[in-house]
Amino acid sequence: MPQDNQRKPSVPREVEDIQPERDARVRVLGTVLEKRDDSLVLDDGTGTVEAFVDADDLKEVKEGQRIRVFGRVLPTTDSFELQGELVQEMTDLDMDSYGQVKDEVGKGNIP
View: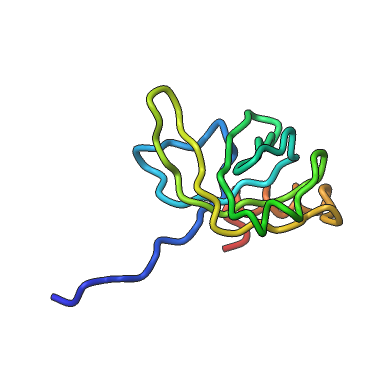
């Protein structure tokens, strides 16, 4: 049987819905609350998560900025954190349109 070396896709999740025992890779859209030496704290309105990101990506991030982080879910003793693989600046995202599309996808109207 051939080995499947393909990475699992990052699934869209709200912080409160991330389940470390089930979710391997996620993408979270939120606002940067705090920028640290090797990580950032992201708030999506349902909760916060610490995301460890590459130093080059971190240089471009500012507190208060809307971003999307794609990353691996790493369980911790009492919660989880993200190992960021990609950071996208999302400041210009139309949140009303985004919300409408998200609702339609959730209803199964858009694949």
